[in-house]
Image (cartoon, rainbow, N blue to C red; front, top):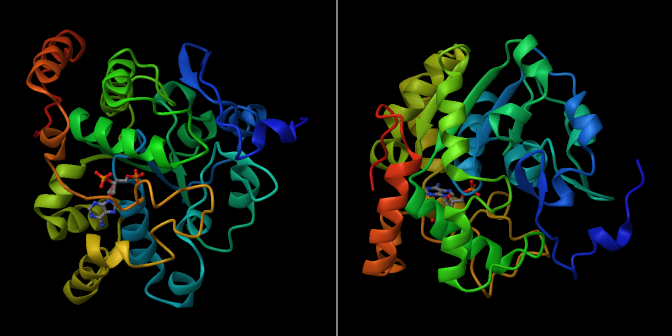
Length: 296
Ligand code: A3P
């Protein structure tokens, strides 16, 4: 596959386009054939989210649970320890190749793919999948600030047009509504999928770590779990160069840091009353599954 270096230049922001019914940018589709033919292993652990739902937090938790606090944690950035399957930004990052080079077992892998795009080998190998969902309002606020600071994302524009685009599903990785619902419904037929919520992680990180350990079939001691909880607190990760993305030059932290607020309810500082009413009205129409409820 030929990669156009012009298109990967961090100077030009990538454009959104419709890709099999989902809005994407070329940095997540240029390696499509290799992504679709990716060979998963039975012990792979896939960390799956709509962007900005807590991927990095859970990646760090799982990395510590499996491999402990070693030199790996203090010298290798989280995006190298947990490669991003569909990302292609040569020469530095080619998700499929980075995964092949992982020395660890199991391999921890990150993806934002909607359920219908996941390479079929994950289903065939019955790999474990952890899905993290975050309430739509905080998710869109976090995404807005991320797109403002990250040159690998399309231009964010102003807040009100960004919010409108989010409601229309015209974001990288498509519609939040379809993403969280598609993965939720997959649980009916695929039992090796642990669906968790960012808000629960905030409320009781210890309990969520317990549940992750049982899902992963790990027997971690109480002290071990407590250590992981403490090491992955927001302030701890915000100050950790290997977890806070400050090593990526294409993210402008003077606009907004990657570890921004880490809170539930920050949407209230962004939505106007009218925007909130319109959002709620539209939300009711799109979110038809009464079992999938988010705390706001
Ligand atoms: P905010 O922008 O609301 O602060 P992702 O890793 O999927 O890109 O998600 C990033 C969001 O998760 C950001 O949300 C970030 O601050 C938050 N986050 C990352 N680590 C966290 C932690 N340890 N505790 C709470 N929130 C965290």
